[in-house]
Image (cartoon, rainbow, N blue to C red; front, side, top):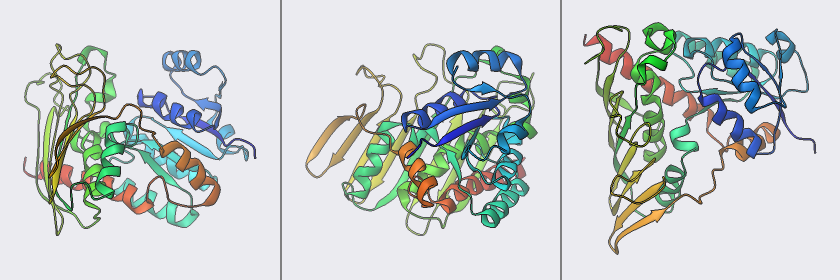
Length: 335
């Protein structure tokens, strides 16, 4: 069987490098990309010389040999790219956020249902983070009983002088909860196993960046399902002294134990990333998850071939974005 062929439209966020590598690790063939920004395209081509740069994205969309389109375009532009790709018979993998408005979400839902194509969003803080994958395996195996609460923390380093203009425009990036917190919304759905979720409260703020009023540098969300609650905090306040872009953490409380993830580093001193701490009736243990397989890419290739939903359920994918958009709306309604 020949390798699945894929292409890229839109490379505005560096997450596109991770998206491409996910598919390359799964054995797919990267054949072409479209980007209007010469500076971004130059760096991208140097990293992936096997992919031809195409001036007109229609050439990619109309190529019947290309099965999958990846995009990390400016967030507000991703839904349009996905819709166009699905209507050309392509499956799609977007960077998060996949949509920045309820209107975009409704349109993408409608076209996905109409065409039967796969619309996947690579929530990298889950699917490309080995400790999160391992936590999912432990929870599904019953290691901590029934999940009753999660706390997801997503701090990021701002690196303000290096950000493009669209990064500071609320309409283009979607707001901090739509953007960053969609990661934690997806994980809350996953670990609680529920799609019936209510936003109890949400806030956003610009605390210290008055020169860029469109930027929201802090946000939080309080969620509940019939059987669980969740808290999410995201911000752009990672201090320069931290050795990575953010000390991302996830706390999972179950009826029979707890799990804590230190996803990107352990400030207590253990080297490397992907640290998992499990506490149950038998005691406490630290689990190094660095060797855990990341199955998303190979599962997506299989889903494209078999028309299944093993990498991510389609409704789960949409529900995570719907939840983030609802929280964003609620937070902004508070003023």
